[in-house]
Amino acid sequence: MFEKREVRFFPGLHRDDAWRKAWDWWGRQGFQLTKTGPYRMHGSSFYSRIGLRREFDAILDDADGGTNVDLTVNAQITDEGLIAGAVTAAFLLPVAVLGGAVSYSEYETDARN
Image (tube, rainbow, N blue to C red; front, side, top):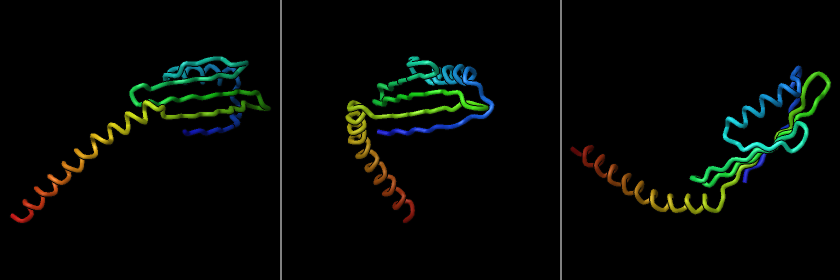
């Protein structure tokens, strides 16, 4: 699991403008958005093919001369993603090793001639 939290101050940025831009941007990134309070949002996204779940929480607060943005992002691979990754690795690793061995053998033969 990955988790990161960052708080930044943006001078000259009004909270209403930041809210509209953030809501629009996160929505275009494929997140399902929920307003959890005044100037607070939660978003979640799930990639079923690779078993990746992403979530974020954003809090926008007024400050003197700008806006504070508190953003927490986390991502995790689900059990389905771990199983799919292991199965894929089990099939692709032998193919890659065999392909590399054949390629090396042909290279050695060409180098001798």
